Image (cartoon, rainbow over all chains, first blue to last red; front, side, top):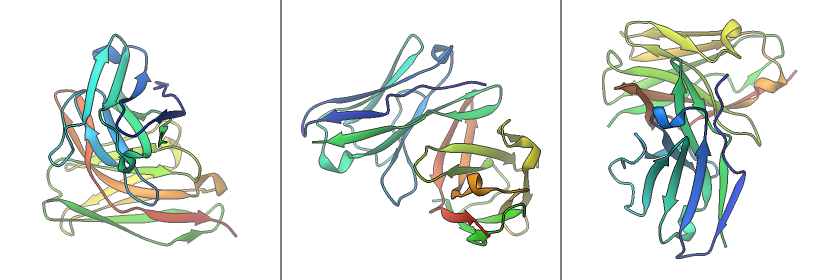
Length: 106
Length: 120
């Protein structure tokens, strides 16, 4: 079955840039998206089709792709950005989520 | 703005069938795709399956043998049934709207989630 690999945790200082990666076989041929989930809340879509932001998502969130790795970048990270982040793609008409990355803002 | 709300029992006994319903408001269910996703305690998100407005379905291969998803367009609802549950099925269950466009799949709208515990 298809798998997406994310680092379990990433730490960043307030105001700095956080980068969360997501890798998968032939991910470069697919479109990835990213979700933010805070404790006790539902996931929120922050990036889709690799680099598009839904309405209401701050400009500090951006997405990129290089080879078979997708990256979520948060510029000028704020304390409110501390959350779990999941990448998601599809393969053979099935949806796949990455294992999730806990972003800690120290 | 489409809104989704899950409903159903919060406690299910082992070996029984988990049943949840998602009510969609603010838009017609007769477009797009609709999906169920869960998050077990201490673990990540797991996609369960989706159904289209026309009733076609697709499921996570690891759950396929136990999952049924149905849609009732007259009530603007879709439902999940998961049979032969065990403690491993304890999770927060979410319903979500699935966008499928140009080979891209993503979930722009989610319900608030409902905790289902499997225990005797």
